[in-house]
Length: 238
Image 1 (cartoon, rainbow, N blue to C red):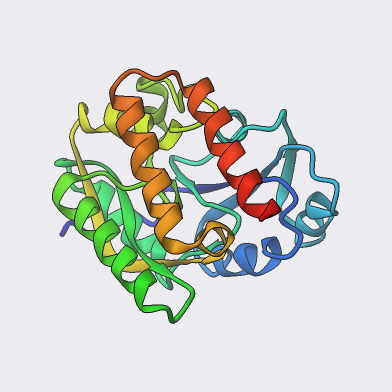
Image 2: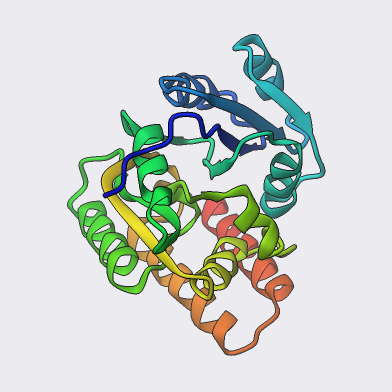
């Protein structure tokens, strides 16, 4: 693998909405790197998320809610050569900065992401990890919780994240694949198991697959988002 260029600045963009319980350790882990800036794109949190982030000395911008909107706003305010999009409940691995620079130093790679590890001991979630990492490595289809990174020029070239209420990372990666190879680093990010806890592992997996299939069949992202939110609401009421 080519050597990294440490002079390339990495902008880490964290879309957040009411993430007071997770944002501080995520920022602390991300700061354990060289030549990086951290931008929290807050979508109107009411739990003090923005205040916590500001107290840690990172830049906070206020945006309308919506992950695509927030990530695009963060990218627009970034000053780095490389953009890395990080979920507010996901921890980057040690040395992620050097790894990302080395990946992008290879002309064959247009972008990169990390393998996924879920912060839980459940056997069912080990199977989820296996499926995610197989899909990422063999189909080059990482999702947003795998900390996708790319040159800012590439981000601009493909028009950023599509303004969708759901599937924005899926469509973003599809566009990226048309530009070149997406490298998957074996060092995993560590993400919270909370979204699998809320609905249960099996139900979450089934719902995710239904959404992907429906999207391929042409169902509008607005309808999918409405249906997805209704499933989450029904589960929380049961």
